[in-house]
Length: 138
Image 1 (cartoon, rainbow, N blue to C red):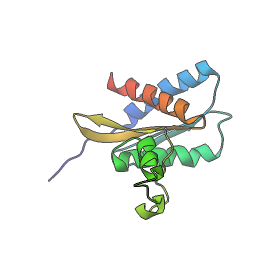
Image 2: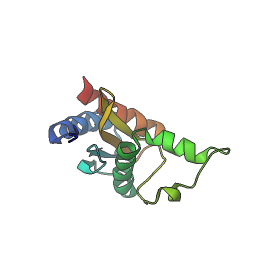
Image 3: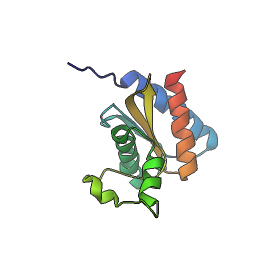
Image 4: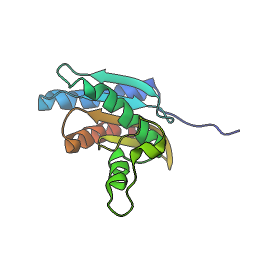
């Protein structure tokens, strides 16, 4: 039997706290999502003023990063590649997303969950998700 380690509520709370503090420092608003190893939500937090579509986008970024075991930016790059690109619809699930801001959480080579941020520029979303990652890996 195979057992799988996964992020838990405690880790999700640390991620949200770290990213929320940085968003407040920057005086910006976004949505933060934390998912388990299968991509299912553990926590979702929307700061006041965050764009409403970012709720679903953050959840989908976390889901994609966990399921694909790679950052959502990389999934999007592969889909947009003119030589080997593919239609995201081929994945067969509307939750797959290729915008940056979703990153997997790996421990000893095993993906145990994902963190995502949505609502700002792609670069800012990635930076903030990385801050969340640092909060649980230190």
